[in-house]
Each structure stands twice: as structure tokens, then as C-alpha cells.
Length: 187
Ligand code: ADP
Ligand code: MG
Image (cartoon, rainbow, N blue to C red; front, side, top):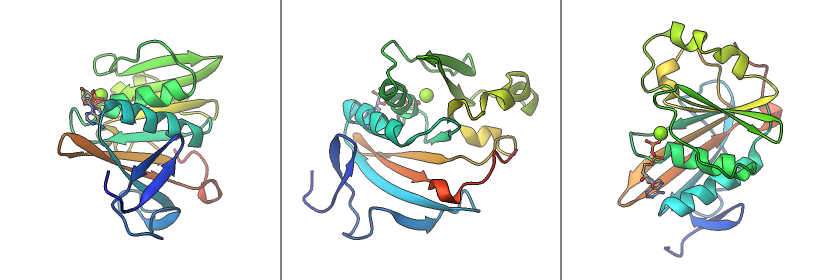
């Protein structure tokens, strides 16, 4: 890990590659989600086990009612980070990719988690029929891979995680809307 800047995210430190003073709580306008200010972090994540740790750290930032977009190319690590997030909430069993099921549901200690993959989404109707409006609720946390396929149908996310290939590892950019800047469900 280069000795430039490290960001503390839960149980481990990551190099950010950014200049000191610009990393933590850096507020900037996200072009993807126009309205609110987002808090940005960028992390180098060298391997799968680090990705799982990042997911577990992300879990500590989430609250029920949150909608999380997971973005990145095929094989980027969206399902891996979702696995880490669910593990952070105490899920110990397998987390498979919901590519064919569209949505998988997890009950963790009576709390609801939905993990969706919209890659194969054919139409808006399909998303409606799956009952997505009921899934995104104050009682649940929703993790959505390929949210761009549901554009115009989904409300704005509370957190956007964008994963990019960086050699054999990945760069993970997390945009998190601070609670005081949040509005209603946005349907
Ligand atoms: P996606 O859901 O984006 O298609 P997956 O989570 O299924 O991607 O991951 C695809 C592959 O990438 C898996 O083999 C996984 O082990 C690997 N992987 C995940 N995170 C990283 C990482 N940070 N560095 C290197 N490989 C990773
Ligand atoms: Mg996936």
C-alpha cells in the first residue's frame, strides 16, 4: 500500500490516493444524483477479502430505510460487497447472485434485506410486479445491482457504491447522503 493517505473505514485502513484534507467528509456534487450533496470516499480494495471487509464497514453506516445502489461492470464485485454488507448485519449463510431471481430476500433477526440485480430486467412492469415499491420501505435495507436498468422507476439512493477495475484489484467510490440532507422516499 503506498504511504500517501489512508482512510479509516471500520476495521481497516485503506489508501485513498487523494490528497490529505480532501478525503474525509469531502462534500461535493455528484453528477449522477443531482439534488443533494453527497459525502464521498474513494478506497483501493486489493482483493476479495478486503472487499468483504469494506462491505462490513459500510453496514455500520446504513440504517433501515436505506436504498443502496451498487454500480460497476460485470465481475466488478457488486455481489461481493453486498455479501460483506449482509455479513455486517449478521448473515452467516451464502449470498448468491440474484441475476436470475431478480430479487433475493434475507431475514436477519427479523429485519428485512432485499438484494436485487436488475441486469436482466426486461421492462418496468417486471420491477413493479416483483413488488419493488413495497420492498423499499422504512423497515428494510435494499441493495440494488445494475440500478441504471431501473432508471426512472427507482427513488434516489441514500448510498451509491461504484466499483472500478484497477489492475487485479478494484477502486470503490462511496457516495453517501448525510442524514440531514435527506428527504422523503422520493417515489
Ligand atoms: P459483480 O456482482 O459485480 O458481477 P462479483 O461480486 O460476482 O461481481 O465478483 C466477481 C469476481 O470479482 C469474484 O471472483 C470476486 O472474488 C472478485 N472480486 C471481488 N472484489 C474484488 C477485489 N476488490 N479485488 C479483486 N477481485 C475481487
Ligand atoms: Mg453481481
